Image (cartoon, rainbow, N blue to C red; front, side):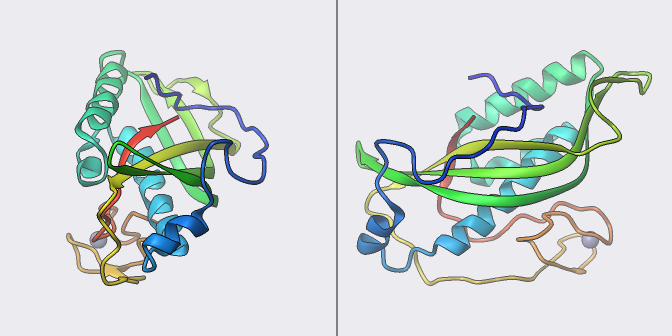
Length: 201
Ligand SMILES: [Zn+2]
């Protein structure tokens, strides 16, 4: 799997991908499953992915992605570092998080979620010269995450924690909006997320 960091914007089609079941069916066998909650968590994770790559540190994503996907992220981050390249991420905002649907198979449930992001994204070299992207205008991009969970696992007590506290400085952080403490810059992940990302494209 190769991951494009500067993907071109494309207009998102409405509705689910073919072959996926609608989310309403998932809610039937897991009544506590909350679409807005998952959307919020995926938004947070998407921002963390961008900042993680920008910082060259993918470790904060560890609890939320499979080992294989984490290794892929780390391999690409290392490749950037070797080349002296840095992804600069400025004012990322998640414009939309769309549940495409889910599939069942091999004892697992997989949910496909597409995010649309707006941010200033550009790549600089060792001397700070912009070598890819644009440092003065916003880039729109969309990508699709696939999250996996054991078929028998269900959503536990629904936790709506809009505000968590920064583990570094204690400031309140709306983790669904920012993923990063506005006071000290520490990444603040959402707690209690059972789904694990196994792919992103
Ligand atoms: Zn903080």
